[in-house]
View 1 (cartoon, rainbow, N blue to C red):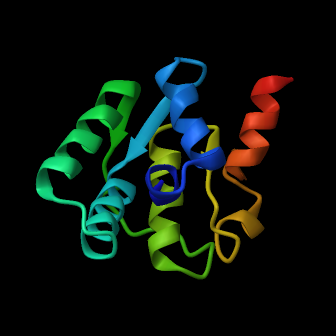
View 2: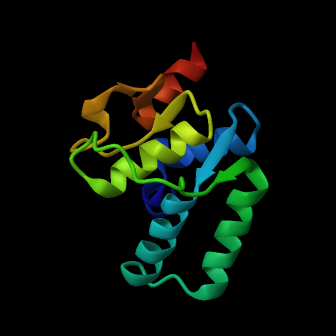
Length: 127
């Protein structure tokens, strides 16, 4: 998600596809929290910029999934990524788009949720 707003490229095009209603975007609360933290701390985004970005994401998404009540099943080797998987499962998502080649992408699929890169999603949308 950070890459979509910093570098554009395939992650940015995924956001554009959601804005064009070519896919249903479900936002995950932990991802939004991390996005806000990184854009503010590392890239100097101001509060107004962050609010505008979060409003845009809210406008193009079909839902925002909060964190599940229980603890996350250890799957990826990273508790934060395990939480993202748990949120995706709670939202009944069938696809999780990520650039995380260390923890999420190697899992490939979990509980019926395919984990693919933005590039792979864009290729699927074209076919």
